[in-house]
Image (tube, rainbow, N blue to C red; front, side, top):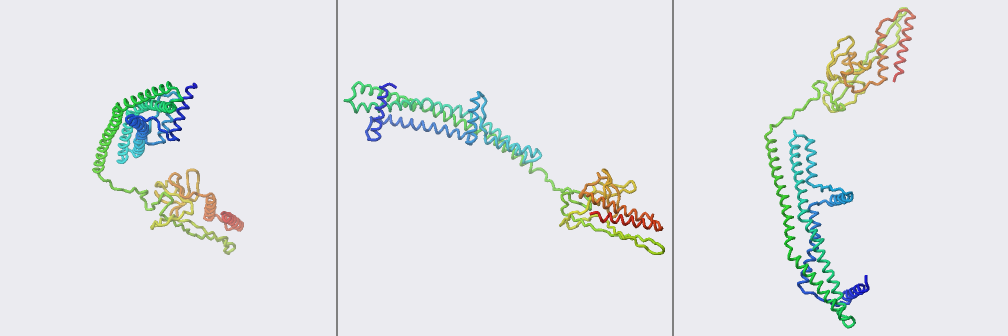
Length: 430
């Protein structure tokens, strides 16, 4: 900066301090100029606030707005032309309704209504996007241009006028110390700046009809949006009324509960709720007597217990956990060979042994036999120790009932030894 420029800045600062601190009065401008300056200042503030509030009106969510601005900036840095659109609330609501409408299916009246409303909301979101584009092109961009050019130029003229006024007032008060030529130049520059600022403000205020046209464009865009939205909603309302009428005219269906199983021994599949199983044992005492030399020799007494089939408790109030291996019949099974066990669907069978991977051995109603595994559903699995114990019992029964024990003493002794061995085996099992 030149020396003359530094001197001028010093003069302005001195005059400003004297006015602010000492209360010195500067050159006053006419009332018309002051009024125009006030209107320009108000217009500048109004344009700034209107631009901000219009953006909030179109994009009310500040978080989404900030994210959109960030993505737009990143796209510009990367040189990408495509920009991300603002997530309209109507579109978000429509997507939600469409998702659940598809999940409910077309056979649901509520699901069909959700599909209709979701599609309408998507259409309204598209109309809202059109509103954003129209308002930006016809209202926001012209106002932004007005603020960046016309109002900025007027502000520059007013700022320059204020600086020249301070310089003129400083030199006017020191007329004797400052050459008259400098004072005259200061007056001319002040008048020139005043005329430029006054003319620019006057032209701007006289042409404010342009701002009215921009406001009209905003209202027209909003009106088109609401008109289109009204058409969409009216059409949607008609569809919903038709669906209501159709649903009301639809014949009423009666509720018919589906029975799980139609059997006298109906069982609940889930944890056997409402059923009570009572297991009792029928005891049979088998005494083996051998006659040796005319005397009766009591070898041993074996107490055998056979479980009965479970019974269903009629009151269906309490359920007891089965404490023995059992299964439920899924189908009817008619025995075709000797040794097979027949049953009907829904019967409860006590498991005694698993012969192989395809056959079980069990009991029902006091009868025992074999049956296929794929005909039943296991309720309580068959532990390994039960298999061993039942095998021992059945082996003992077969041995006792075989009737092969001889009357000779050695045979009696062998019988005692075998019976004692079987009893020890049974007692050793848990």
